[in-house]
Amino acid sequence: MECLDNIIGLSQTTCECLEEGRPSDYNVSKSGIFLDRLEGFNINLADGSSDCADGDIWARMAQAVEDAKLDYRTDLMGCVARTHKPRFNAFTGQLGQSSFKNTLNIAHSYFGMELCPRYLKGGFVTINKVGIIVNASVPVSFEIYSDNIDNGDEFPELIYSSTPINATADLITWASLTTPLELPMWSQAGGYIRYFVLLVNDGTFKPKDNKSSCGCGKDNAKAYSHWLSFKGVQGNDVTNFLTFQESNNLVLNGVALNVSLNCKVSEIICSDEYPLDFLNDGNAMNMAYAIRFKAGIKLFEDILSSDNINRFTLLNKEHCQEKITEWSTIYGKYIEDTCKNTDRLTENDCLVCRDSQGTILKRNIRA
Image (cartoon, rainbow, N blue to C red; front, side):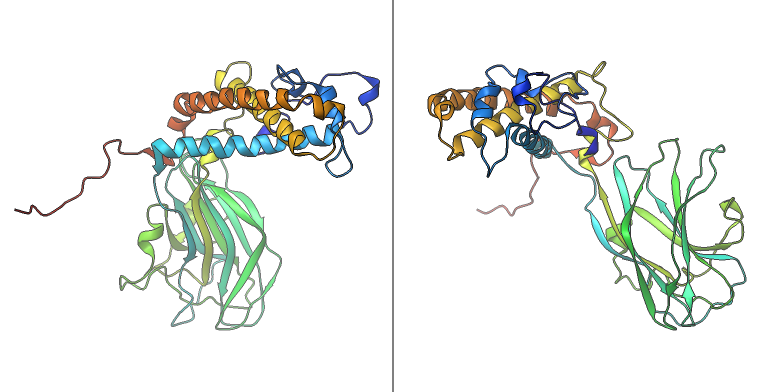
């Protein structure tokens, strides 16, 4: 949730006695809201509770904000889950078979698999591993492209290029991506998007004829069919995938994938496509105020649990507890308000409303 970085600042104080340990971005706030401006917050109280184990005032304030952001996301998602449910169940598993019957004689420069995701805002295809099935024990490279098929101004983009993978002849060789490749199921430029995972044909190997399905009704197609379809393709010109040919008989040209298919419901908070707009979006400001209240709660709870006893902690325990109770009530109202009124729910295709009437059950009538 990088979009929440610096959503609130720690302080605007210029007090020289608080300079030690102060981070460089202590006074940076995208929303213009600062933790130490919270009504009832006393920076001297917080500073007086500093100790070696828990850190100084700045470290504890910064940690309180980080914990508050995590709690806010969790609490808001919990609130949303009471009225909405996922459109589809998440899927993690293999696309394409590991088994094969024959070796394919393909002369094209590239061959492999095309992924066609359903248009689903908030949905992602995450490629964890690429399976390579060829007839020779040689180094094999693969490339991954994205292509927006509804926008004529967009050209295919190379988004991943592997180092040579030492394949084992007539067995599937799995190449793990160092960082799983997370691919959106919708195009921010407009239109549908598709992805190509292609082996680079250098003439030293031929692919096997593994298929997308056994055709016997025992594969996991129902689990992933809501999310995407896929097929084998081959061609020469990766600058124009309209020139690629579809493979016959569900053949995937020696490529299989280990993927995760799921939605990021947290996209309703903020994302690259929908950044926080503190000037024009009231929900963005509500979020900043809520996180400040939660950060104050976390910091004062930390102070109350500290065994560093001094005049500040001895004299202000009751004050801290009163503020925790007060801020908790206000924070809960912010969560409920954002949960019920955010328009991001309609901009995200991952959620559907729960049936408020409950599930209708069929029962026998007994005399």
